[in-house]
Length: 449
Image (cartoon, rainbow, N blue to C red):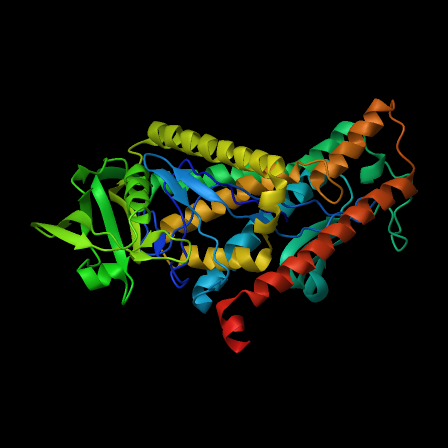
């Protein structure tokens, strides 16, 4: 499975690694989550078959910034160290990822079965089989590495007793039938994403932010300039050097940060709201290595979060449609930015370990984040899986389109197998590289090293 976590979210979400060391200017845009939150957009899985396209689903993603509804620019901070949190949150994130894989593969499986096409295997995970059973000539299995899945077809299986000219083999079906089978995984994930959003809108509600003047100070670093000069966690900075900060959160944060960065070793006068009191506090930023000022705080927009819960079916479908379209737009926009700026974004790609780590971070916040995490991964899965690349559903669809353009004449089987095998090899090698890299970035692994 390929995942690409986009830069923007129509809904109000984000994550921040609560155990990552914050910088002297760590801007933490908060939403309805208590500490760490998840943001919006994306996911993919491939179809795997045991015919000419043996697609194996591997998992990757790209981390970037995330704007939110009514709240401006929310960012997904990508720190070098990854904290996976408690075992429960890890299991919850893994369960979400597994459910998405099951839904994707079930789409392929059902599309084939409903058309009477022979299916030989349905597997969750890769590698050695941990458990399996057979029913109606289909082997259902759970495998050792739960990082993907596949649906197997007996088209080129030498052990199959089905005649090669059987009309119900996938390869012998008309082009439209094969297109339906291959695209059904994408369709299933799109439907699943919409259902998740619909359930959220109808039950826990969508988070909506109401901005207030000033900038909130969630945390103050020990022995920092801010701590030395009297700033406390929970303070709201209303003005800097006599200039009132705007009500729009990200703009206010950026303005405050820029003022402090321009003022190393020069006192900055802050108007601070602390409880029911308004105070004037002078803070003298320390000079950082690059010559800019720093005070050692985390900053976030000063917002109040409320929940928007649908009152009836019409509202539920209306809210869900807007949310779904917003998330989908952001997935597509993120993919476009990734392609246009690949040299900068390539280093941000992470594998399944990082996805589980982020999912665990989301699960530790509250149920809202888990809904959004699941919806975003489903949409991203659907979008990326349509890319015309070998080993993806889109690659298989591309081969079928070439066949249609050739008047129904298929490419030589050996050529198709070479194309798909090369794609699978690249995906597997990239997946292994990312798994190793992301594992080494886990906090407890770094502590051991």
